[in-house]
Image (cartoon, rainbow, N blue to C red; front, side, top):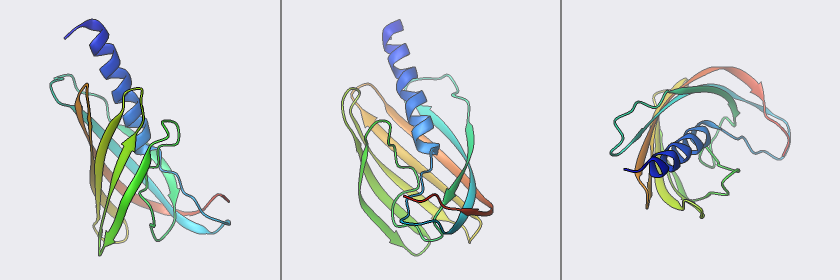
Length: 144
């Protein structure tokens, strides 16, 4: 693998790590939400280096109607969001440069914890981000 390819993959990994943990709440008006602390850990197929985990806090609606990881910077779009009991799933597609597609799944283990995985496939590499979230309090959702 060339140095340029490694740098491109590192850049993609950084963008995806930040995107997968940038939990954006969208609501029409300010209301009470849940404050979540989420730790994400990304791995890339064929890259033995360990990418450091990332922890962030975000305010999410009490009832999820979209994936809690909208990627506004890359203009990724989500589709096929479904909620079935404690599990939510969705698909995601990100445009060029570095176009990629993926799927996400989160399972809530009660009201205060979830685990999940987001997988991405691109021409350069396959990436997996594991999520571990815990509810740490209440918060006020930002107005849309």
